[in-house]
Length: 157
Image (tube, rainbow, N blue to C red):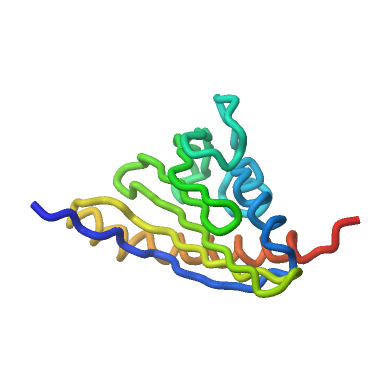
């Protein structure tokens, strides 16, 4: 059986008025996720690996649309400073993958591309995610990216 490609649920690009190294450092420390992404209740890492290291694990507690909290394990899968950072979680049926790509536009401007993907191979799960979950993830991502921009656009004092 052929493996299905990842299903893109979100693919957003925005400009951030910060150097690429600053943006990468902030985003590759997944513990910062709680500061900008809606629905994140808590994040902690059970290991001593440096942030941005492939193999680093984070335990992330999310507030689900049902109102219940769920803790999932997220692993850094790719990290190429300062251009690429990707994480995956085995959170069925979604099996999410987040990809962050950065491009330096100038010394103080970075283009960020945020992709949230579904890795599920189940046709039924993909259909349900596309019809029932995609809008929520898109709405959360848009709100989160606006907050992220505000955080990173602010001058460091």
